[in-house]
Length: 266
Image (cartoon, rainbow, N blue to C red; front, side, top):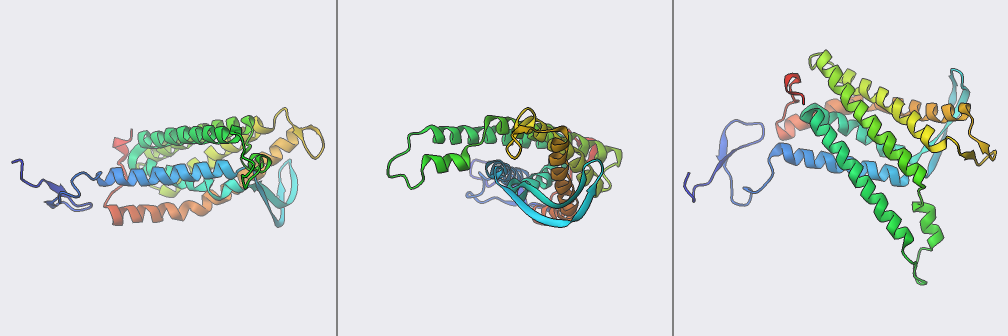
């Protein structure tokens, strides 16, 4: 090829190469562009969930009987639940199209970015507040003053849950020879989020006092908190299953990509 000849590049989803214009010759390929977008949304959802996680919401339910825990007619949980389930969906999509290696890479990027975010927030909290600041130090700390225990609990549960999800997704995919998308997506999320829920609750609340009783949290209270949070995640995982199929359809139609074959899983 001569120095002045325009290279040929294939269009996404098509086999016929077309000349690439000088303006697009430096663009990322379609798989890289999609990975950047998916990872960007994943990291954003993760960090928003962590930052907003200190606020809890409450809503009433019909009475639910939980084995060994009694009956409940309400749910109280962190508002981080609004954005964190997005990470379930994106982990499964990346695992589906980029394999375990791609999903692990996205998980590590999320871990590093979460650590960077908390470091910058810590530095902002320690900065001397100006007398003309519209936000007082107390108000700023009330919003961003996440304790070290919550920070450790959040990232430990996140990393453990993600590694479990990625492993189980690939295991089920190989066992079913790439069939039953709903089974590997929902099954891996249900198991991994059980680990996440009980791990974060144990690290966060064990050996600490319940502000309502001024006494250490009991085993029953720990199980109650973890179980109600897990049930909510369980229901969300089921509800997200159709979005896995919608995501596969969009990626196929928009980017011309197909899921990674089972024999190429890495």
